[in-house]
Figure (tube, rainbow over the protein chains, first blue to last red):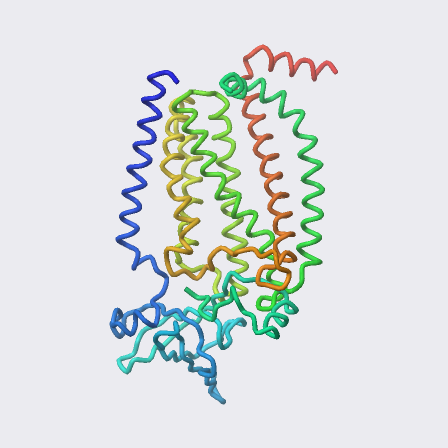
Length: 152
Length: 249
């Protein structure tokens, strides 16, 4: 390779590496702000102030969903299997909403420690399979690769 | 190796060689695309969670995968332009930008349709969606930059620099779902076991669709590059010969 070309290539690599490091460091510094949602553990650690508009994400705890008989109001516990947050929501839930499903709720913490959601989104995991395969796996009691905390 | 490299840089050589490739690419795309679409849209079983909606994946994943491949390709072509001043590299860089913009736009659109059905929203400012949107704007920026500079050489250099700098976004898009809490799920792990999450009946047709869309991408890129070659080399003797010969036939 001719010297002037080697020099040019060196400069390009240097600039790309420098920029990469700079962007990497700023993303690392911003990582909390880039997260789409807080986990229940972060909420329990007091990282959010009541009234602040945030998102909380977790799994819907089994047996925690309480539908109101007359109105659309629903209450459930979202969990990351370390801490729980109770969520109140009045509105239409996504079709995928069910117990054991990952969700992201948008709203704010009330002073009593429950989360008042104005919107609930369903989060699905990266595992796709047919109804038959799912049934076979459940029957075998083998859910490896499908940990209950598939939600990060 | 260097001779081959130098030859590949010759637009005329590429033009003549790609002429031989194209029929094969057309045939393989036709086969892969029809098999893949038929398989993905009609044969693949319903997903246990998402039902029929899962079929969007067979369009969304290939399109998104190519949109992520376009930017590094443009950056590599840009590096070759800056260091070796190879004519063909800049023609490829110019041709890939609009294709990349289209694929990124399609990935965003198909993702929005999927998200609207499953997540309950067509857009969220999560890291994956936002970084892909930034890539879309970067492609638009590269296209705009080229048309804003009159001198072709200066335009080639400016676009090459923007492509190299913008390529830093690609690993961010790729790993956004692992580094941060996002609404978008992480990448799937395929399983060879037929009774497991992501069994072959799910991913084999996906692989067919990915190859089909990659061949489509190759065809689109080659055709655009060939146009660009004719455009830029229009004063060279071989292009004049080519055009007059086709006229006489």
